[in-house]
Length: 152
Image (cartoon, rainbow, N blue to C red):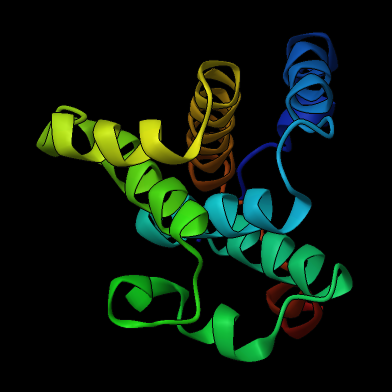
């Protein structure tokens, strides 16, 4: 596979605002583990190995269980997720697959029942930014640490 540039070294000025908005979205308004589940699920849908690895590791560091991480892609069939987490995951899928789902009203109503308006905006921004990062990391073929070790 042909080497692609590292966006952080190729254009640091362009990448800086991405980092800053990420810091803004990562404040304490939403629960840390909920955010990691959301970011991991979006990365799973998009197939971003770099981001899946990163967010699974962060979730583990924050005490997330292996069972919940392993079952995340099948969250609808599991009882391990709270109503609030389920609403966030449904909204994650709706926005990540927006060209197919068009953010349906039923998903929004579920979200509305669990999140206030400010949290809805914060969660939607987190999902949008995660999808943007997935596209950057996939586009530039960022390699997750296990693959980097193997290549070395």
